[in-house]
Each structure stands twice: as structure tokens, then as C-alpha cells.
Image (cartoon, rainbow, N blue to C red; front, side, top):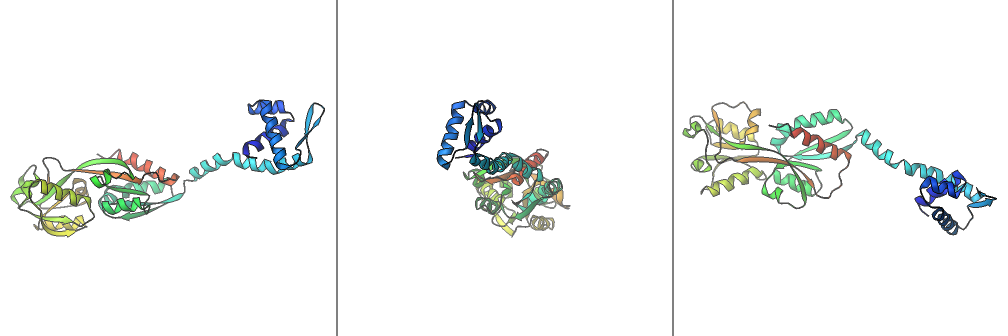
Length: 298
């Protein structure tokens, strides 16, 4: 006996006729007759009895109607309950992000999301790109925001949504002769001291790769995960700093030139989730909110 059998039984009890119940359920009468026969054999009792041309419930049938009616009512309410959960827009999610992305963009989108969905709790974890990737793969973070580097792009266990593509620039003190250039190649920097990112930042590996392709190893001056500190060093004339151009909108720098690379050094960022992992309503709503928001990034 299953839900379908109970639904058919209740329809017969309501209509008092196999023929009417078959029409209501868009079934043929023999199907209903077979259902009731199987139920009676399984339960070991008669559910209906004939009274002339009519059928009537037995005492067992009446009792089953009392038992089955609330069960079927609750079963039929399941879609409504699930939509109610969405209407309440509740839940929680953990977000992993690189510090630059968090400060530049997520602070705005998270604030908007919290206003729209006050019942959804957000937790933000700031790490480098590689740590964010690993946290998503370990299901420690539901969503990750990071640089779209080869290690992320080529990971078969991730679903990746590209959010935007910007350029990387080099910050050079204006007293440095290179500071007068309109654009610069990585090879032009072979004699400079580099203020460098700490391990775990994908942009560090991208800079190393481009230096290698240009035929030299970078001369490391200072290492830090704090981009503002690195810029400040360059502002004091102490080394150059390479970073995504959008970061400069958050920093009031002086005595520095922001010079683009030729060829362009791209900075592409993405949203990542673990492939095949179930995404509850809160996560789906946040992803949708973020993707729509980043469509306005220029």
C-alpha cells in the first residue's frame, strides 16, 4: 500500500462509486478495483461492501478514511510547505573571499542582500585564492570569490562563474624614470625591487610566471598580504607594487604612477561552488544576487 493507493481509496469513498472515482482520477475502473483488492488482501479486511448498485464503506473502511485523510492532506501540502520555506527566505551560508574582492565589491552586495533577506545569516572568511578554493572543496565555505587562475579554472570538482575581467597595473614612484611611461612590459621591471604578496595569493604566481617568461626572477623587497602596506612602501620610494587596478579606487595614493602593462596583464575574478553539492534556497538566492550585481561592474 502506498500514497497512490490511499488517494484512490479516498476518492472511491468520497464518490461512492468506482465509475465516478475513475472519472475523477482519469483512470479506468479495473485499475481502481485492482487497487482496492490489493489493499484488502494486504490489510486482511474488507474496505467496501455492496448495497445494490452502490458501494458503502465497512467499519474498517470508515476507520481507514479517518486515518488516511490527514495523511493525504499533509502529503498534498508538501509543495506549499517547500515554497513557504522559500518565502521565509531563511538559512545561513559561509562565504570565502580574497580580501581585495571583499573590500572592493562584496561589502556592497552583502549589505544589499542582508537588507533584502534579513533572515539569512552570512559568515565571511577572508583568505587567499588557493585557500578559498580548498575551503570550498572541503565544504567549509558554501561559496568562494577569488581570482580565476589556472588552478581554479582547471579544477574538475568546481563549478566556476566568471564575474568580471579587469587589468593589473604597476605602482611606481614618480621619481623613478619608469614612472613617466604610458605602458610597461614585465621585462622593463627586471632591475626593480618588488613588494610582493604573501603565499596563497594567486596573483603572486601570475607575477612570477610573467617574470620568468620575461627572462628574470623578481628581486623581492618586502612580502605582505596587506596590499595597502605594499602601496605605502612604493609611495615612500621603496620598491614597486603590482596589483589589480580597481584596488586604487579605495586608496588615496600620492607620488605614484599607476602604469598598465603591455601586453595587458588581466585580473579575472570568479564565483566558485563545489560541483554536485546541494544548494539550499539561501545559497541559490545569494548566487543570483551576486551574479546580477556583478553585471553592473565596469
